[in-house]
Image 1 (cartoon, rainbow, N blue to C red):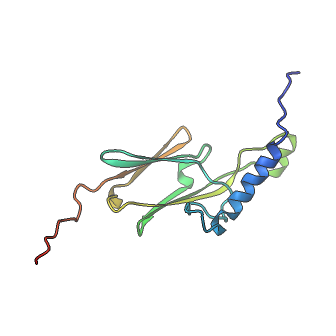
Image 2: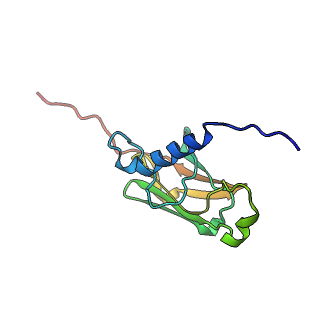
Image 3: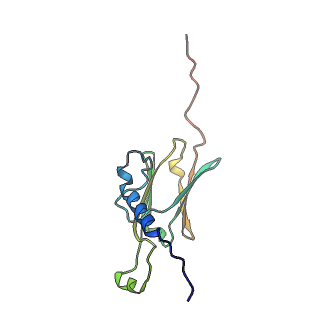
Length: 147
């Protein structure tokens, strides 16, 4: 039998992490409103700003692309979906269950330069990639003050 390392404080850290996640929407100092307490799990997301586009990558292994909904409106990008879990009866043989299942939800504010009409998304190898092109023209100008 291979020896396994026992981490004494692991259960306490997991409890703290779950409590922080649950109370995050009620924390006035928290400025990340990309998740809500009604979801079952929150996928990790990377956001990258490139020259001509913004790229958002979310880890969603095991999620069927047809179970993902992406909405861009009112300056927000919302990603929601569902990962099916195993039935309770089949979990009886497991000694550990760490992969969450159920609904997920993330919401992000989009910059004014985002081209909402050209947003594209694809899913490959458990990673959802959303490409948000930048507008080619911006509505800005310098106004001279007459005096």
